[in-house]
Image (cartoon, rainbow over all chains, first blue to last red; front, side, top):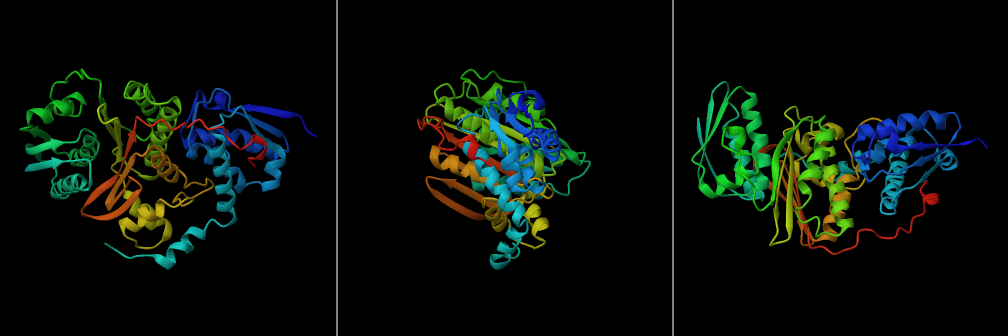
Length: 118
Length: 289
């Protein structure tokens, strides 16, 4: 078992607001190489007050495009996250799993109901 | 040219009036627009944001803009929220502190937008809101702004404006881009010609996103809808020929009479909401992944 590395989101984004996809990308860029090396990562949200789905999609959802689900479950954990944000992260994760299983599925859905022009 | 604007409410016909202004001025270039407000009996303060987006397009084609004959009541509203100061009107103090001013930001101005939210929503019903509501509302605003940053391709920026109604315990905030519209994003993504209404309908589905590349998406608008349902507030989306409204548990999609060039999202929140948004989560951090 490798040593646990605590990654502080606040320090990466430089403040309490996780409200942009760019900031989320910065977090992703920090943690993806660690997971790639098989390191155990604990992502700390201490002092992060506001987070939105675009931020979490970029920071965490995107990991499912690179790593298998069981690898993420094995290596990544979250801590110090506000209770109100946990359900949001859960939905981001579930959405990402579905997305990467079949990114084209939403295109298929429209073809059956698609309207034409105004 | 002289264009006589009419009354603009924060509803579908208000966007249609502004879309007509956009259409009538679309071929004006290196010239002058005199925007005559003499027929404007009422102008909803938050609608300064979509008007700002329409006029930014006009100005971008090297036209000089002059706003004239503004009735006194309307002038007061639009000076207090700083919209008219762009057109050389003096600023007016917002004594009642109910204004959420007009601002034009660039897509890269995310930090400035965060400052705007912190500064101008404070004291607008938020002290009376539960702490949880204020926090959730701010998140929704950031989601909408971020949607404009990611999807709009608006070179002219993002326009915001709002108004707090203490008596009605309502707060309206409108965020507008002068970009390609939801229809164009969805058409490009699907490779299929669909109407503005169908494009909005598609974009509101959970998990639907036009983003390409490695970041999933498609949750922001769904979360916004869920919040508004709980809060008993309202959402409006005007984008190209499509108008969507959700409020009072009712949802409507309507085709507009004219093409609004860009996307406008209005969130109206019920500031008297006592719902607790700080629920004890049943989700444990260990079960996230």
